[in-house]
Length: 88
Image 1 (cartoon, one colour):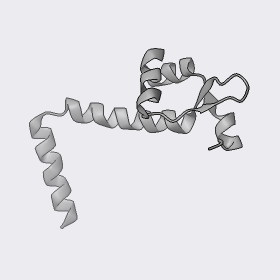
Image 2: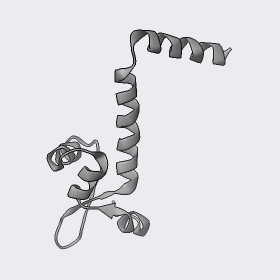
Image 3: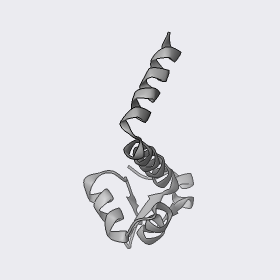
């Protein structure tokens, strides 16, 4: 699948993606290999580029996961209780 012109204009090399995500280039390479991040490859050179939309999606997911990981059991209980009361 070819990237849209908009995706191409807002895409960065792996090293910049790593900087935006606060991880190493190797971690970004692992994300690509595991399918966590979907890159596209430049015609001719075949170098991968990561769309900013992918970077933002991974950033949101990792930020949310980090917040959940830091939450105490009481925090998680209170959040679940609040969620249940909002559904009623």
